[in-house]
Image (cartoon, rainbow, N blue to C red):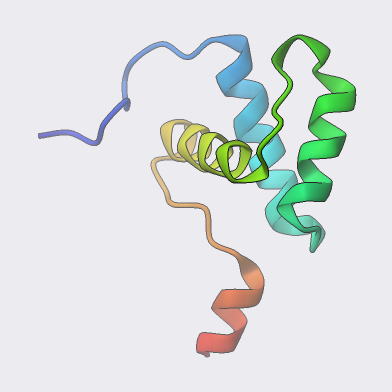
Amino acid sequence: GASAGVGRPMGDKGAQLAIAAAEHANSGRKWQQSMALWNTDNQEWQYTDHKQFANAARQAFKRVTGQALDNPRTTEKQL
């Protein structure tokens, strides 16, 4: 079938998470740092576990773009 979640409407939180994921991928920050920034900007949707935040952000990014979120540092190491 189709990719999970693709084509379903996304709420504000999902859209914001997708943006946060894209910003994280281009920032060079650790997920803990990106989560702290997220929590400051999104008081109503705070995370306490950076792994849960990273997973949610990656899933949101994939729903919006249809692409997996690549870590640029990982990609560079593979070249």
